[in-house]
Amino acid sequence: MAAKITEKENYLKCLHGETPYWIPSYSFGPMPGMARPCTSAIFQPPFINAYRANGGGKDVWGINYVGSDSTSGALIPEPGNFQLEDICDWRDVVKAVDLSEIDFEDQARKGLEGLYAAGLDREDTCLEFNMHAGYFQDLVGLMGFENALCALYEEPEEVKALLEYMCDWYTTVLENMIDIVKPDCIGLCDDVATWRAPFMSEEMYRELILPWHDREAKFGRDRGLPITMHCCGQATDLVEDWKSIGVVQWNPAQTSNDLEGVKKKYGNSMVIAGGWDSRDHLLSADCTDEEIRQSVRDAMDKYAQGGGFCWCGMFLGAAGDREMMRRNMVVLDEVDKYGDTFYGYTKDIQRGFKNGKGYTGAGVI
Image (cartoon, rainbow, N blue to C red):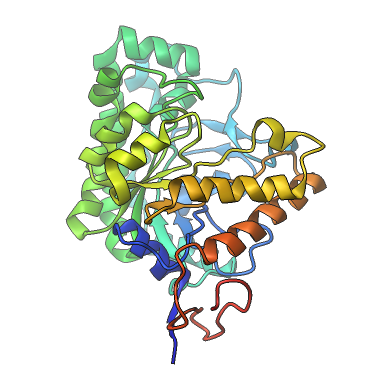
């Protein structure tokens, strides 16, 4: 009888440096059109991130988040509405929520119930504990980009003091919840780069941003959990720093990076979750479905040889954009068809779900 391997088991195999049976698809939760359980889903404590689920509002630091149909509801700090103008005033402005009044077991239950209501099953899907958008992103949310970047250069010690204060709070939450939630991996996040380059020097990143991620990562290292890093933009030169704190997967690993160099240097010890962007001709009205499919195959051929790769890429656009959704169905279909057979796994292995109903499309050989 063929052994049934779940999406979660296959993905964790990849994160542990082994060649998976098929190319995993990394996402932040269920995506429209998925015909099988998603590989990975993010758990976030509801009291920290409830505003992300209800279309906007203030987070625990008072940062007001807003979305729009043009971005399919993706949220950003409200433009022009920043509460901290001078970093030296942060002690008077930034007030952490009193955690003595938080029922962490209840928060874990509510957060997991929300995922279960979305149809997720923990035996099928890897659960990633990821609390927030990142320390640099929190600073930007409080001050806006211009003031935040000026603060990094002009008042680094005040920035360090503020982010340490926030890290003390975040790690207290993590300490109280991680062994209740029992996640399969730890997720870190910080968009510290543009498409072309990081917002700061490597030295500044190591001094002012990395230490706080390191403190969160330690919870994963101490428990033997894989650690992921979300960072958009061109951040190739920061990969070694992430490796130093135990990160084993980078998403979305955009194509402005030297991903072939990362693959050559780190092999399967730094999983590239990305390597494909909906740019250039792919966005053209005359781009054919076959060209979209070929772009998927090209990315997998380039980065997935021997393992160390997860698919992580979709077309993005306005809510209700039917052409975007149709193209994404093409992407997902080709990811399944080409990715499922990429490593040539045998009849002894069957893609299966907890309920015993193996996937009946491409991939069951």
